[in-house]
Length: 228
Image 1 (spheres, one colour):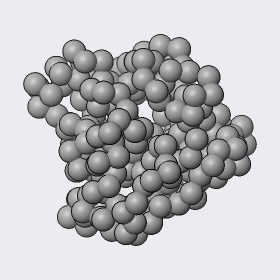
Image 2 (cartoon, helix red, strand yellow; image 1 turned 180 degrees about the vertical axis):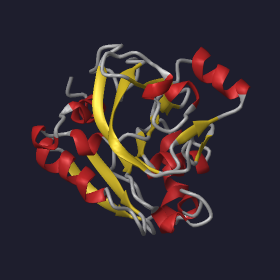
Image 3 (cartoon, rainbow, N blue to C red; image 1 turned 90 degrees about the vertical axis):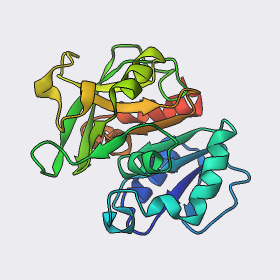
Image 4 (tube, rainbow, N blue to C red; image 1 turned 135 degrees about the vertical axis):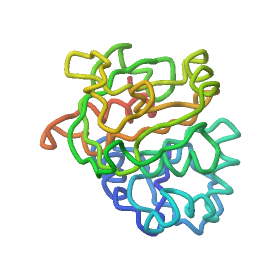
């Protein structure tokens, strides 16, 4: 399996993500520059975290128009796996590959801390190696991570089991006080209806080795690779 990690101007988790695939998982991985328009040969694409184009206008709004995104949209619509982490999630929303929006956190403050998330749906290529209800520990680092959508969209996400991760406490309880940013229903990650596009705010690449304080994040990448 060959994985591509996109680099936008302002990406800062691209090398972290590359490292996990190359050195931790021993997967064939390459960087994809934001001006590239050929994704032939790739089996999955990752949009990493960072501050693409300085987050001008709003997070992900300019990156959505990068030349590579035209091909990523086609790549995703053919059923290929696409994963957006933090800023990558924001870009997927701007590109309308996922529903809803990410608005500034409650309190209007940047949040950088470890959080717990609960696996709500393990019937996706990104969570098939995880038990439903499992609690994962990994960091967040964002200012606009407050997931918002209208009532109809939220109902659709629930009805179609598109919510895959929710913020919770260490015991797995989904509580308001475990929500770091104000996201509706404590949403930390969602997939599209077909299940091949994942957007999540927490950073699994920063929780992929014991030395980082948690290895929970690597389980998501293992699921994607089919190493379950």
